[in-house]
Image 1 (cartoon, rainbow, N blue to C red):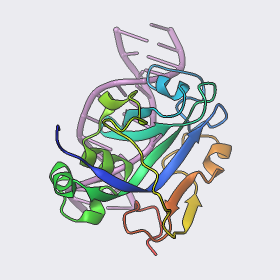
Image 2: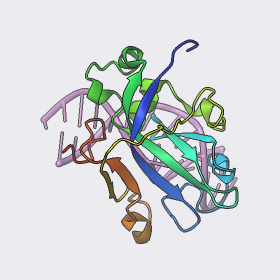
Image 3: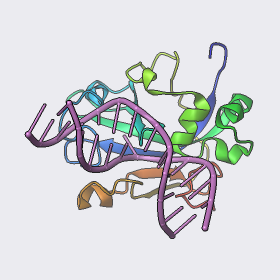
Length: 173
DNA sequence: ATAGCGATTGACT
DNA sequence: GTCAATCGCTATA
């Protein structure tokens, strides 16, 4: 772990926000799992889904309004060779093109849930000085059949249109 | 104490 | 296209 730096460009996300979003873990109020969503924005929220996959989220908004952004795909930048080992996959486009894939590639699990993402330690986000020229697409969120009709209809999944490193649910051109 | 299930993936037909 | 994996969280009792 120590000395290894993984990085990537975020290319696909989903938003989960508030008490009316029945797809959001926090919509009924704080629980053991999603307690970190009831903090000020800037914390890391990681949980295990299907007993198999860790999901990486960044908490946003105020402590009175639970919200987080699920990181669904990144374009690998640093640590690509180690990611390939972690994933047992060679194709770079398959390394981090899904929320469960990227946590395995980056060696992120729920032990990291609750750490700060704003100090440049362990896990953090950097804003590029200059935003690249790109087209942002949006659509309904994936894998939330359990949510009500409103929540399912909200187009809160965002992705870089035509990017090679997005998940299978995005157009590649 | 325990049933039911999931913000997914990979293997297989 | 179908389906198993796998375990912690949530709700209910």
